[in-house]
Length: 136
Image 1 (cartoon, rainbow, N blue to C red):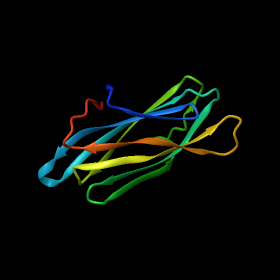
Image 2 (image 1 turned 90 degrees about the horizontal axis):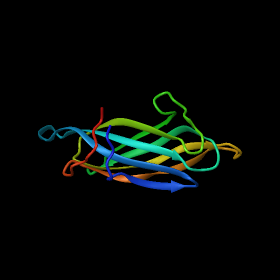
Image 3 (image 1 turned 90 degrees about the vertical axis):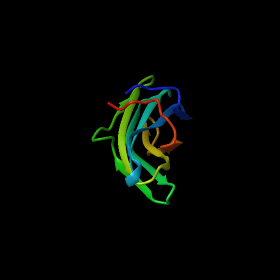
């Protein structure tokens, strides 16, 4: 995957999440769009963190809502020391040309009891836009 500067980023307590879309395939006549999305989670805090889950949503311009609320990231529970990062890509088949991606990652930090939700920056998926990212 190549990353361009059209990512959006959000920082919470030293954890930076950058995210963005890529249109993988579109069959406009049949209203089918395959979207890929990329997330990079950077630990810029002073403590080790564990990424234990996610809860993100895609809502399309027809009012349909898709949700991924699950433990881990494709079977992984990444642990990040200060200064490390984790990259994640996945796909979402939609039946609409436009949608919005939003949600959070569930994170545990050393020395802090309990998990907390770190918000993922909201971004648009629009088949009318060109996204400069390529999924391998």
